Image (cartoon, rainbow, N blue to C red; front, side, top):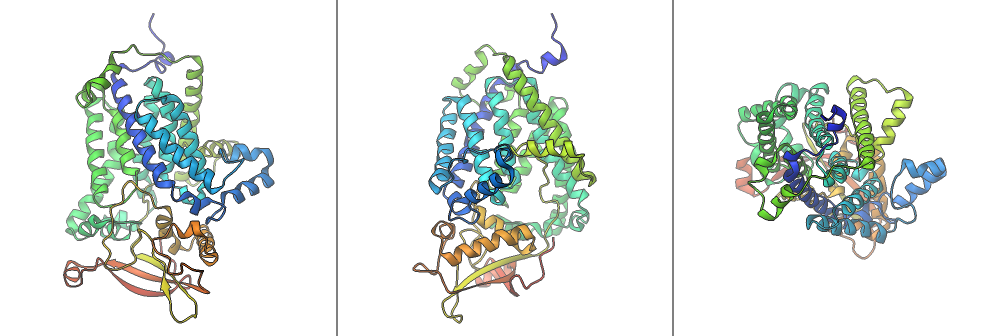
Length: 485
């Protein structure tokens, strides 16, 4: 008896069983990188003596919302968010990622990995509010269903996720009205002004202008047209993989975007059928293809169908509201917010506007108001002769977020003020986020922040001085014009 269209959605797709197995292992590596990167940082970011203590956040949520706070802030830390608990959750996540990579206890590992990363995502607050974090959460949640069986529906949801990431990023570049995207001059600025460039960005910055213009056009092509290939016949899907992979490798060669590009590449695996993947895998992994496909049970189907409806609603409604500038009706807005509380159904808009100058903040302390010593960050540009480091897949949350502070947006001025207060108090967990503390015995009596305009040195300047950067003093922050955008 032929299956109905609805029933086909829950049937295993025999052409993607090996691809699914490979995807799970690649996802395990991404999870491992994310947890290992976060473990040494989370205490300084969100511990009781951190920049934004999460225990204070939870207390305020309980006081204002009561028991509803459990749904509004779905985390495992309601009964404790000490440094030990936060760090323990991150290291446990790393251990479970290794377990998943080894093919042990896969379903349980995937469930716990999602819950742990969701909890740390919410605990990190503004420090975890990035598109790669929500991308990992949604990919990890869908993997719970993929692990048992690569059904037509779960594969579609993964393809929808990759489509959203790529197409929305291109759409909002156009919709933003940013002049550099409109004039195809974005790459004249991007390599120099991105949050954490590595040495490859210096070389790319001095490529010919015509190549920069071509790069902008290629970006539009890969983000506005290629995503539709995902839903077309096999030759188009394979072309989408090849083009997207090439684009991600170009970005990796010029930018430190933690595990973002690696996760994008990982999502492309599920566009490859087993005819291709089978050529890449060892024989022991190919045995999965020989085992009979396991059709999902009723509970699995109900949960997956519910998730599909919520993801499609949240992503489409959120995109419509953001693109049109019109708020959703209150009931729909509340449902949209509830879904996003779990870090899924996100809207993606990678670099919709481009900065045309780089402002760096230098933080100094003094005991007498005359002699000043600078705190040194681990990765952000500071010393002019320091080679910009390649740190993928690590995500230094403080170094990354301080790039936003020169915009003087209230959100960033708030957390930056809390960071400065932590330096005044000599918080050990916060100071551990820095490379060098010039006041190891006790905090200084005075602190100041100066703003500087940083630019890459020219090839001639670098040949003469060895410096990667030159800089120009702007003034004492925040008594300087905000960076726009």
